[in-house]
Image 1 (cartoon, rainbow, N blue to C red):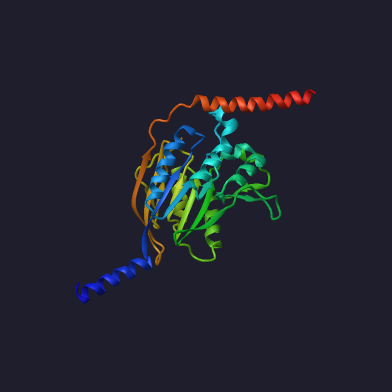
Image 2 (cartoon, rainbow, N blue to C red):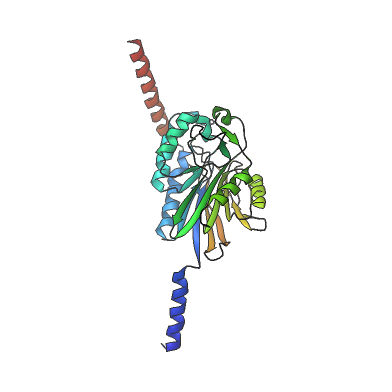
Length: 300
């Protein structure tokens, strides 16, 4: 190899190691709603992505711990869902309106079990010194040298929020702007993890062009092609619902400019979910046994 060729190779290596731009994979789910039949398939897909060794973020956009349409699993499923998310290594989750149906005490216990932050920035304490809430507005994490600011949002629905008298809803765009302004140092990537319909999320992205990626939920929409929004070219995605897909978004992040360019997005199908009646029935019998024992003890 000539000296000139060696010099070119060295320059390429230097720029590659400097990491001015590199690909980051974001795996995402939303509205899992305690659909345990699909978790094994999702877990296999996550493991395959981790095996590549590429920088990876694993995110969930809410409505994960509860679903009144599945009353049997709703009895026992929330703790098991948190345990599964801990095991597969979620980095963060947005708070969903269904998750809030548990009420403050139960939700607080679930969040404490989680090894990842549960995010919501547009439910804010009504006054300073108000009782703490079981979620945080944002989190800053490091992903293979990338500084990522994650900001949570929740849908503007009134039903579950009446159980939380110490918080008030503030405009979503204002909440995101507040968290960005609070950041001490500019992050490499700003990701909003939101339990919001796609159209609502797009309006927030229009108002806050600094957002690089918007992972959404609530409306159960499948976006095989991301929506690119606003002057900031925010990349907006959603994976559908009930664990039918694992979203796989790849972005090219420029550390110098903070720009995130879309490389690819796919919805990885988890296939047909098996029916696991026996598992649910066993859990139901366990709960029934505990309730019956407690009732008998009360009579003694």
